[in-house]
Length: 71
Image 1 (cartoon, rainbow, N blue to C red):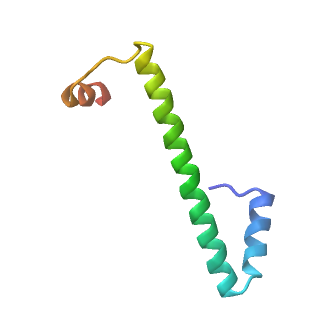
Image 2 (image 1 turned 45 degrees about the horizontal axis):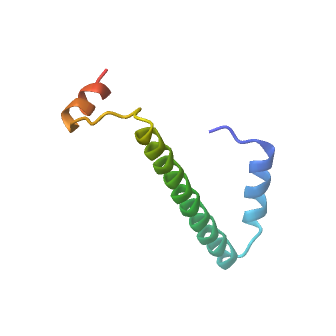
Image 3 (image 1 turned 60 degrees about the vertical axis):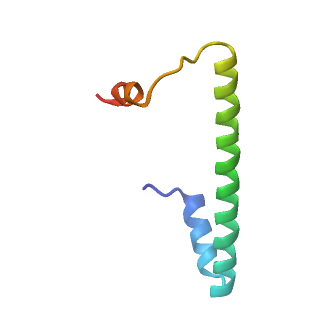
């Protein structure tokens, strides 16, 4: 994965932290990532509901969905 200078700078700064501070930083980042993912899922659900209400979604079976996903 390519690393830009800002990313490298953050890593270098993180290495200067104590182990306890690094662990705290990791916990904060994990919580923020989880919150970001929750927000993204909520946005996706709202978009899917709106799509359904507009009649742009059709009921389908699991088998039909799987067949659609096959190349």
